[in-house]
Amino acid sequence: MTPPHVEWPTIAVAVAIAGGLGAVLTWHEHLPTIAVVVALALLSGWYGSLQHEVIHGHPTPWPVVNTALASVPIGLVVRFADYRRTHLDHHAAPDLTDPDTDPESFYVSPQRWARAGPLERALLIACSTLAGRLILGPLVVTAGQCRREARAIRAGQAGRVFGHVATVIVVLAVVRTASVPVWVYVLGAGWGGLAVVLLRSYPEHRAVADGSRSAVVRSNLAGRLLFLNNNLHHTHHAQPGLAWYALPAAHERRGDDAAVRAGAGWYRGYGEVARRHLFRPFDDLDWRLASRTDVVENGAVETIR
Image 1: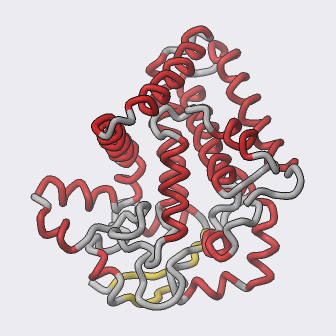
Image 2 (image 1 turned 180 degrees about the vertical axis):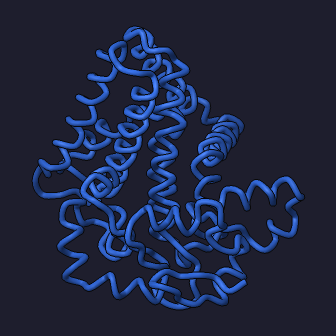
């Protein structure tokens, strides 16, 4: 569903991302390499937030224009059409967080957990901590995308795969024309950008037995803008067609802070998420166990172990 008019705040975000990337590519030689990497990571992650808005029909009444705004593979790895399909399936999932029906679930089915060997279990547990999600998560996402591309080729859909590869090559050609080392761009926009997106998604959903399975993370202005208010995730799932800049008022009007405290959890900010889960698993990975026994502690859900 598209809006009846152009949503200029979202257009401004798109312009700011493009301008920021242009500035980094133009003046990177005057910046420390770490500053270039961080800037690319933040801009790529911000672009992921813009893509999320486009998936939900924003910011213009013209779908072709919206898709054009979100289809450039700035982050290199994920094809926008794949992200759109899986995210819409996520919203349509009859049982949110169930790995058999929710394509964005980070839980695993009891059957998969039983089949997993020691190395796979260690990887799954590591990625259920915030540190593991940010460091190893981008590699896991990349491996998953490669598997999807391989299945598409086997299914006779090689054209879409080669189209994505071609646009990635164009992006990297622009990067090289600007004399930015490819490894710097890959590290920043690719790895770092995915890490920013994974930071946002890390606490978004929890497989609680009762209450909302969508959480709320309060954040400062910078975090709210970076994630386009998607940190108010319970409100987003309740009204998925609402533009990002309208979410805070809707959140307060609905009283959604109270709604999530007995469910997926309420956090004071991403600092609290890190304090709780930097090296501690977020939940039981076995979805059946995670959704069975939970209690609320200090306003955020903690699993009984």
